[in-house]
Length: 133
Length: 133
Length: 133
Image 1 (cartoon, each protein chain N blue to C red):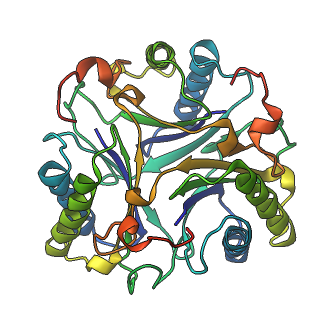
Image 2 (tube, helix red, strand yellow):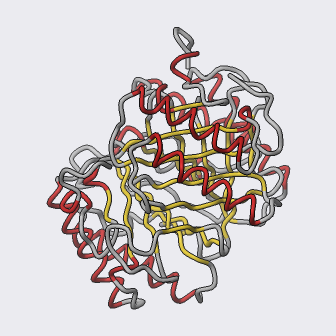
Image 3 (spheres, rainbow over the protein chains, first blue to last red):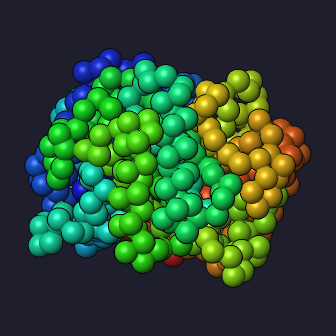
């Protein structure tokens, strides 16, 4: 159910972008209790001056490979699950496409099943009863 | 009070975009307790590879006409109101500009009146007392 | 900890954009309990027809200089703090780059420390104990 916006500086090849999406997808399935094929992502490529990030605040050093994941979920996971997902996402991105851990930032916003409609005007909560999303 | 981001694949004519915005506006007034002229929308047009959506998960089949509405509200509506709005939005979009129900996805994030300032640094909660937003 | 998306119409010079970011940064440090260098911003420049805003709803009149700040925080501030921040941001933008108060809209979405990971897969809540974010 999560919907993710990815922001990064423009100029990466398409294979870099698709590798980021693949690694996000794998990390969600493996560590964030997200079903296979529940994949909805929007990528925002920013020009110089449009993506501002401190190079050292609470981590880093960050480089021009910085990637920010802004994830809207369908429910609030326990903190242990969140933490395991953060670690898994960083591991996956390190392997594919090869992003340094210091360049990965994650921001979550938690909604509820009621707040999602996947299609046809049907609330996700009416079709998701008992499903692990 | 809602603020809506609309994400879709780039390449639609301007009339298609404005019809989406019009139908969103009508559905909000008719079924989501939003006042006339309370209209704030940002459209993000994505290149191929920048908007990823499963074609069949929890609905579909989705096509390249897929449109995702990401709506930040000023209060949490009752679930019945949300459901009625989902249905109305899909109906409106089906009529104008003619989008298949299967291609409409909605994600809500609920904030509060305090979290909005429409203009001039004034919190919406200080001007909205008793108003149906 | 806040992450801010800024939406405005495309066409402003780079100095205008950087002045907006500078003023946001100053207002956050001065009035929103945000540490120095805690600065993460994504700017979305929209073409005509991609940014729709009522010129008069609950404020205005709004012009083509309209700027919308969509801020995801790491905790819910008291309403008095929010209000002071709204006012400070408008003041700062009025001075630099010179934006009319009527053209400034703010939408907040409040997450928690647990919902942020600044880098390396580490949850902000595990490094932020007792820090004023």
